Image (cartoon, rainbow over all chains, first blue to last red; front, side):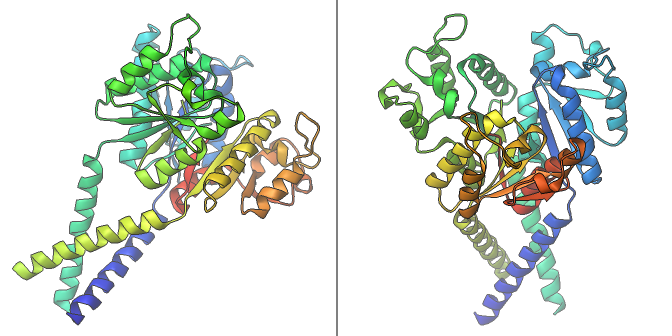
Length: 143
Length: 143
Length: 143
């Protein structure tokens, strides 16, 4: 049985090393959970930009619901009167993903055509925030 | 040593597949961290309902502390004058769990008898939010 | 091949037990994500104290950015006129770590010398919140 014992230890060690190396090497995936109103959107997009500057390999997905979807609607402007669409396109070009909650669209009677081309509509914002963490290896951030 | 090498690779592969299948198949567990006042409770319970509709197998636990416990106190009403108790019972019947922070009860001098029968009192809300994630496989959501 | 099958099952079981025991035994690490203004700081530090009381082995790191850094600046006071420095030193003495976002310092034109000696400056608060979760095994809490 001694050979079995050594073998077991070897495999355990190898798998631990493998797992550690794998975890260390993987790029970070972050879900930004956005459900605050349009006045908070500029600061949130600023956070995303700073995050990308600090870690260019990070994969960021913004999941929006409730008032959080507003900056992704057609013609949405910040409090200086600038449209969000430019900044959203810019971030999308850098790999940032945007998701909008369909429950919110239905409740607020907003047609999908009003939603930014850069955003993908998902059935439920909260379910998506949970799914990304539980099934896709995302970590969470509420900006 | 060649047989050992093949064997190690086989086991590693098998464990990876096993882990992946296991992770994919598991139901999602989500802790809703609630420490905002009673005016936010209707929207939060609406989020929980939507979450359950989108993913009927999800296990949701609301951990409340500070002003977040108020909708779970006897006679608590929303801003339309409706008692929260009905909605809380309804969600509890669907498997949603409610937890109330004992530190908050002590600080605010609220007796445990004032707390909804559907809720379980835990020593510390923040410690419970952390424990569920670190030890019970929950993901996090701040509504 | 039967011996191989038994062996594989044994190793799988052993690794699962090992992993479970390992996860159970580990101390919990929590990142408190703080980006709300100085009026919320007393309650947040109260949460941290309660958390430590409930779980003395917990490792807590506060990552601050935006208005969240203010209680860590020289001479910062709560709304009763008491300096935060005493409470910060006290918590630091209990192993709590404080981190301040350099992007915030630059944007707000605040010199590093204004930051509490107890705090460590990190390049980006949001990137640090994500990194601690993805690479250091922290769970998340937004107080």
